[in-house]
Image 1 (tube, rainbow, N blue to C red):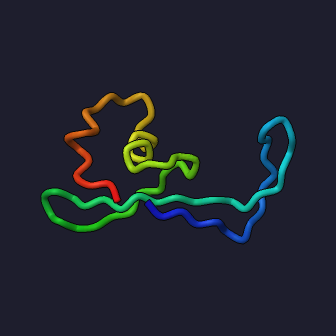
Image 2 (cartoon, rainbow, N blue to C red):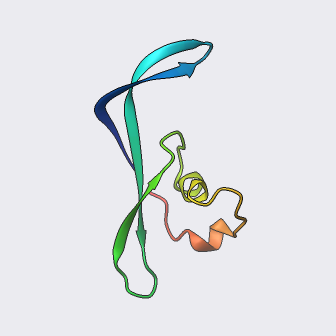
Length: 73
């Protein structure tokens, strides 16, 4: 998973107070099993693992993430 802080600043409510923080973006690298092409999915920047990032792309959708996730680095 790749996380990037942009130059743009945003005000966010965190721990009971407003803070100014950079706008964060996160991407998950995925490979299509049929074409072997590599793609990047934009995911929730607050997650820490590839499994959580993959789950954040389809909230409310139940899958067997263990079989769908080939490798987490």
